[in-house]
Image (cartoon, rainbow over all chains, first blue to last red; front, side, top):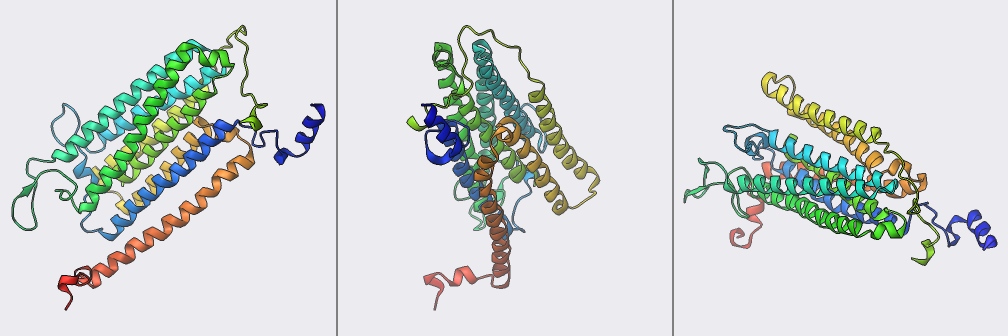
Length: 233
Length: 132
């Protein structure tokens, strides 16, 4: 055993050791996130390329996403800023849960995981509101090109805002992000129940909280980019 | 799994006392993220009222601030700053691919726009019904 350890110390890649000094599960979570980052970046890059192809038709986001619950009139950026705040806040509670896990503080992990899950659900609800207004559109709408009627809001073939690709990419990218948030909430709930049952306490470490934490921060990270490219620019 | 069985992260015994929480850095990063987002929205609103600069200039400003936020999330909240340098490089190589792909596709988009503006019926004439 002592001999094996000296060999491993001399050659970190010769096996029997963790050369990156992180566990298998955490490293695989990072590799998954990297591949997922490529998927998201290719979607966002295609959004940018399509926008460059149709610069004169592309709608100004301030005129599309300007609703706020229970407020009359147009307030651009307000609601998405609130959504950003909610997701950053739930990211903070996730880090606090991971930090509590490092200290082996079961009650702390449970408390912060519950707050994280609540933040995730509020974000999903906000996204549903955002989609509702995007799909239903304004009262005026836009007259169709063939003059056969008026289109209100958006669907997969027509929308009142701009090119067809604009609405389709909105549905694709925010939908793909929303599905990530949803699966993140599901993972958080599973880990919460495992924490309550004391699985990690018996295991001796709370690394699973760290792994779902990585996924949750990644979802937050993607939203930071979606916020910039869809709503700010 | 066997390869990594001898690596145990943050192993505690159940009877160990719980040390006090050290959370100041979490809240510091939170305030940074919040402040950067507030600056983004504030500049956008100031530009609605005053129109002091073009959307083109603001675009690069927003992208810069987004990278600042991404840096704090990845290196602080995802603890990448605490990982080994070799691991950071393993993941960071991806950024080269992304930058290449971004530059490529943005140039391609502008070129396609030129094609469309110079030959407005280029795509239509490509269809079988219109070709004669």
